[in-house]
Length: 188
Image (cartoon, rainbow, N blue to C red; front, side, top):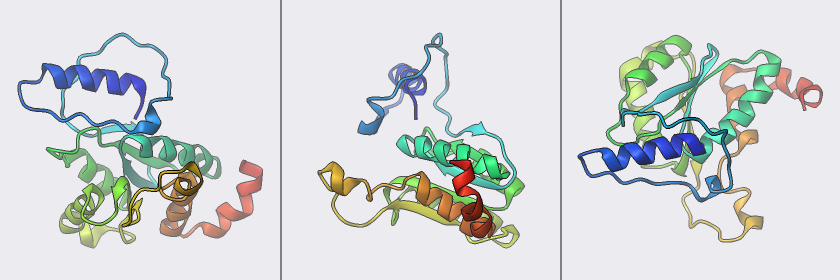
């Protein structure tokens, strides 16, 4: 989701004794991070990057950029997202995800891939099986539609989930659409 995380995960991947497939989103190639010394990390899965109480939102790679944009806007109206960066898709370590959703009792998963049959579907299934009766709202997943990826910038702008879609789904889940829409001009 950022240059420092990519560097540290790549080093950990190379040093790991198991086979590792390292994927990066092309839209992250133009992002920058403040340099920090190399940190030894484990390939152990999710990392909570923002604490919150209103709703758990999970993403990975480029979707984290859009989630953070949405978070900056939503914080201004008192919505406190708990943001988890998956980092590692397989094996999927669900302990942090389950603990977060136990706290917030709401979940949205933002996927860079197809909504159907992907990581977002798996996370929603696990949460529903483990915490279904304790959730305050239906789990929501955002992802790309089930058709080929457009090759032009004009078409692709509506293809991937962006911060506006994320804000809409958060508002729908929390039932605060009117509050946010009434204040959005002041916020922006």
